[in-house]
Image (cartoon, rainbow, N blue to C red; front, side, top):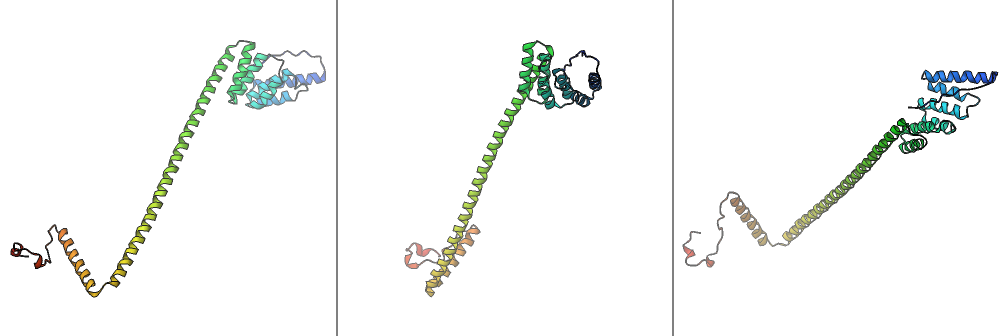
Length: 240
């Protein structure tokens, strides 16, 4: 809560002083009605606007109008009024700006001048808010580290996958080249073969195909050719 100071003005009757007095009345009335911006403008229009008392009242009006930077500037010119109350209000202005460290400093300075329940309460509240802000900041840092770590891991994984993909691609190319070369070598070899060798190769392929067919039917392959010179007398009785 912002504290207001009540001041009693003693003045000699003159047109200029009467004019200022009327402005002060209007400014106070606007403040009481909650029209804080108008009140601040009226205080600013006074001839003695830079005196500590006027600066203080203007600062209070600006604070309630939520113009905290302007209020702090006005409070800085209000030195000479009740210093404990001025520092209390300065602390409130920094609190509203969420500059909790500076608010704490102002409240502590006010308490050095005079012990006050409200100022003590605001000080503890500012300390709690500052602690919460520090915890949030640390959480953000921790989360950022986790996110950065995850990004790095994702980049490494993507890089590894890309590398493996490239290796597989290169291996396919190598295998394709080998197969192509093997076919070319086979064609060259077939070109160099004699008619009899070609005939034997065709027969070999035929036998191999027959054996594969038998295996696929789960049958034992029969011996298609066996020279009688290699048979013994026992084997001569076999029906092959």
